[in-house]
Image 1 (cartoon, rainbow, N blue to C red):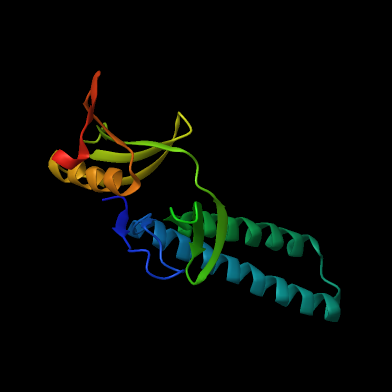
Image 2: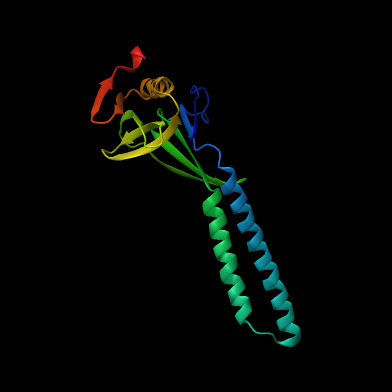
Length: 184
């Protein structure tokens, strides 16, 4: 599975009708991110020692700059492997909040909801049924992946009904057609 999805009722101001989470990171990405963050702390510690030595015996700043470069690369690699995204949609206020987070640190980006066009279900090359939310003609958000067609179609139907948009069944290559979500 590649994501997590659930609905909220719009009872309070901080609740959203549609929340899409990216899902869990694969274990190998988490492990590699931890190694990179550890390496970053090692290089920062080494920079501290070099700074202390420089004050005492005048050692070279060449190693300090090298450690700074490696610490920056380890930090950027660790962040890129551990960043997660959630999308929260509030139809009443016509806003979408994209939440990017690494561990306990996060940043919210507020924007207006683009014109949502339809939800589609298709079979990818790995044998999973992908559910995409399409907007602005050719842009889409990959919402979830399912192992069977029935689950994917039920999920897509719930999304289509909630957002009041069309549902497209594109599970057969070259044979796509609109489906009434109320019938699924």
